[in-house]
Image (cartoon, rainbow, N blue to C red; front, side, top):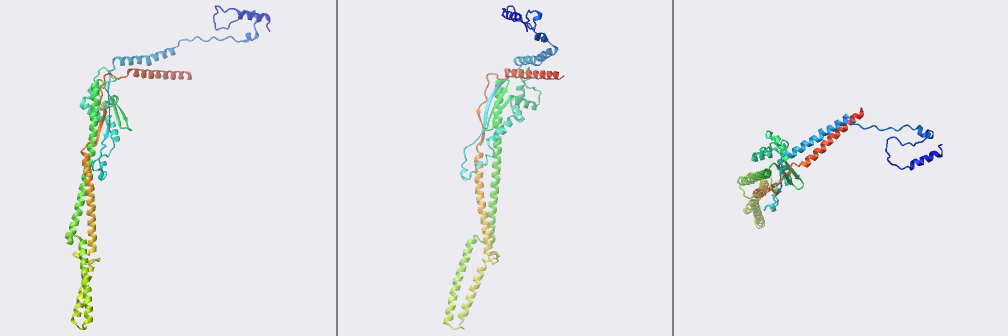
Length: 422
């Protein structure tokens, strides 16, 4: 154990003013005699000094890669966006497909106004959305305005301008970059953003899109009207043919049987039977009177009996006409004639009713065809830009910096991962 002198020396060393004190890696020691050093301090190993960091070749490679992969490309991008990229102007237009809501005068006769409106406006907007991005639309606008020439106008901008030697497929891909379609299926609204290197050209392209879209809707409406009218006309022709055949069959029946109305003829036959039965009753009464007032050999009795027999045979013949297999007009019984007549009458009535319904449907189709049932409602006309909105330089530069830095960082992590595994 150290003596009191060691404790006093320690207190004096601690109480000294800390002037001009320099920090060093080695711990501070007290000026004590060698004999006063504690045993624990003598057994403690010397402190390790950290190695001094030096610039190695791999660090130079990382800096060089950062310059080549991040700084240099960003400088090129900034220079190109500032001095070579052409300004682009945007024209906005919005429209929707609408359908006539007014009903026809024939609706109360059968609710036939739905014959023409086979497809809803939502399906029309779906077709229109695909048509705007199709090659057909690009070809039509190109034929009308010279689309390839307009988009190839900036000569020193190979990134944002169109190559005039490209094919129609290349022009379609470039079209989808320059024409942005915003489609809301629930509301059936289509909004377009059309870009070009001149504000008037952008507006002209947007106007051409609206005109071609309106022509497509009109063509679809015309096709629907033609199909509806053709179908209604075919139905009317078929109904007319059916009615004509039913009337001809009834006329042929009357000519063959020489009966205009079998029901009236049967009533006449029934009247004849009633008359014969009345004469039979009178003849029977007369015979009974003769038998009661004359002798049995009286010739009037025999004559009355013959008259009664003739009347009975006539009644039997008339009744036989109403039975199956009886001898009626043209050798047919009245039951068969009546059944055939009723069948022909029912066919004619059904044919007449069908003809009236089909004629009403045809009149409705014609009335609907006289008006434009579907049309393109443009609620935002093609606008004329006053300032260039594209290309968005800060956005392009920021995204480029982000992705270049991420690529450089990913390659750096891969390098150190491979180096640590060695």
